[in-house]
Image (cartoon, rainbow over all chains, first blue to last red; front, side, top):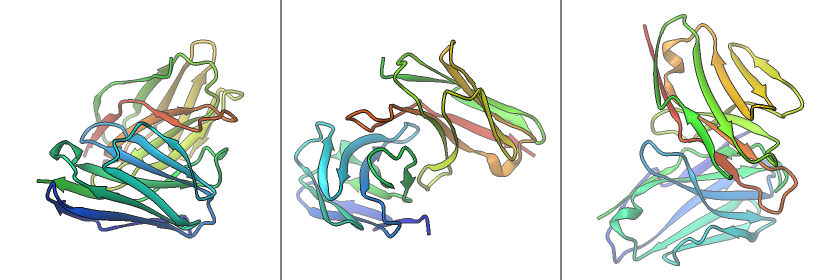
Length: 113
Length: 114
């Protein structure tokens, strides 16, 4: 099973709301990633977790807060977002940090009003 | 030096034709070059990848050509089909480094006309 699942598929939130995005993989991968993708643009790396520890934070604003509760789950907590944060949020996983092959989930389409 | 330049931005090909997408890089530390295919509303999916110790890799109708001296690589889609219509991203990665980031190209929107 090479599937990465993400919930919800779509999310609309106001600027004062708190919401969370969820990502799950059961491939035994030890590295997990959050990307942000704007329309007609490539994915932009936000965070990398390796063995459940935050490995890379690409200077992402603190209104985005990642969490890795266990090796299969990755969350992205959202608070006080701005309309410009509206995008497709993609989760990916790879076998480990040295594994170049990343498997992407279908993404969560986020709209911030 | 961390950029990967991709062209063309968009491409229209007739069914049965050959689609060619090109990428170029500067950083000689890159040593893994995947191509991702993304359909609307979906996440990118790994299509094919190459390491710089080979000049060509073929998987079905998809071929990567790699020119190490020119620091260029390209994706060829033979016998292009309407189902190949998608956005294609090349990428580059430095294996073994402290930062394991994929550097994506800007993407090519391919439309295969029936």
